Length: 372
Image 1 (tube, rainbow, N blue to C red):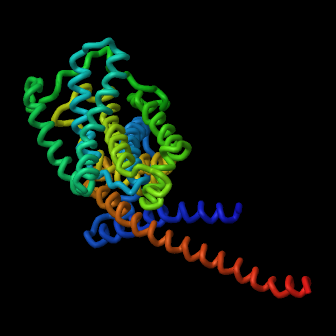
Image 2 (image 1 turned 90 degrees about the horizontal axis):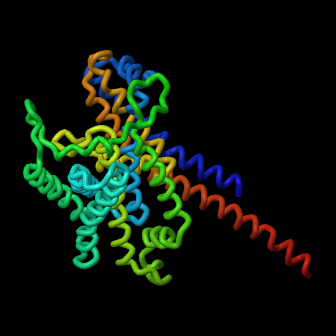
Image 3 (image 1 turned 120 degrees about the horizontal axis):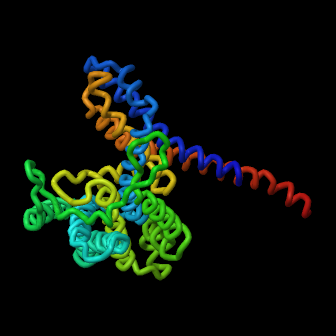
């Protein structure tokens, strides 16, 4: 049994490592074809970060982690919630607008804003859940369309409530009060900046995801429905209810994505609020194989590439967009790598079963002879 588990662990590591190797080779080939300095690019990207950059990497990974966990909840049930980006947008806007009213004192304002953001994200995802359960609309189609709708709705509402900054074209919601702004955690020695306080929230979300998906009846029903909807129905699982619950939970977690940025950095929602976080979560969830620890490593890698790309223009004379190529190739390669590893795993398992069956058959005559 220990050998079997070791094989599973090695195969699990093989896919992301293969994807990284492919990304390295493909990116190097592109750089060579364009005449860019390959060695300087990789030296810049793989150089040891400074303390300030370490903080930026952790902060970026915190947001990416929340995004990937929101995506992974749907993936575990074979639901493709492509609408995490839209759910994050409407939730961040609603949370920032609520927090900016300062109806409650500091810590309570933070907690209630988290609730508002989760409720908003969950309700927005609930639209896709309703369309899938009641009208049979694929969640892929509905969530993609809801992303575009969310962008338009948030921009329209932002113009209604925005506070324009003097001397700038930037508009945003009213800033949250100072009592609700989180100073951050000074956990990186020598860094002038601080880690988002809501890193703690990401840790809690990761532990809760691990527990509810792997240790509860709800998580078992969710995974069983994803493996075989027919078998789930036969065992008494109400599939429509599971679809709605899973998408709403995924949307609620998506609502938390913007909270570290709101309380630890921007303090309002505006036109400069970071975009594309939901789509990055898809790649990170795939790379981390929907496992909370794997997603954490993938989120750190994604954030590391983002931060290290800032010096490419200065040190290597190459546009920072090279990192987009790396991330894109990783996302493309990891899907292929997982399929190759899955097929290899199936072949090895078939060979193991065949050997055991062959051994059983070879023992059969001797057993019969002994009985005679």
